[in-house]
Image (cartoon, rainbow, N blue to C red; front, side, top):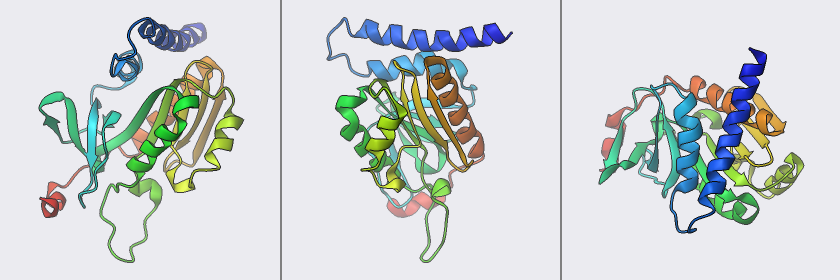
Length: 229
C-alpha cells in the first residue's frame, strides 16, 4: 500500500510535466494550456465532485473586481454566473475556496504572478464595518502561484518574497519541475515546505485540502451584493 500511494504521487508529477512539455512542441500562442493541464491532471482527479473548478473574474460585495483569474475552486453550494459561456464565470468572493495564478516559468514571470496575487488580495470575503477587527485569513481569499519551471530552492523564493508586503504573500508557491513547494494553510497555522517532486505535490495537495476544509461552510448572501448594482 505504501508503494502504491508513493507511485500515485510520482505519476501525478510525471503526468503534469509530460503534458506541459508536450505543449512546448507547438505554437506558443496556445492559450490556457498550462491551466488546462493542471485542472485535468490534478484538480479533476483529486477534488470531490462538490468542488467546481473554473476560471474568470472575482467580485466582492463592495464592487471590487479582479481581472481574469487562471483557476478558481468554488466551495460547495456556491453561486457563480457565466460570461457568454460556462468556460469563464463571475465568482463571488464569499464562496471562493482558493484562486490560482498559473505560469510557465516563474523566473521570468515573477512580477506578473505577484501582481495577480496582490490583485486577488484586494478583495474581501465579507464587508468590514468601520472599526471592526477581523483576521486577514478569514477576510482574504487564499491565492496560490503554480509554475511548471522556475526557482530551484525554497531559499530563493523566500529571498524574493522579502520584496513583497507580507499581506500580499501568496498562500503557496509550487514549482512543478524541480519539486519546490512553500505553502501556508490559511487559518490553520500550518506551514509546508518541500524540495522534491513527490513531496511537493503531496504538500501542495495537503495544504490546499486544509484550506478548502477550513472554509467549506462559507456561503454567499446575495442581499449583500444589491448595493453594487
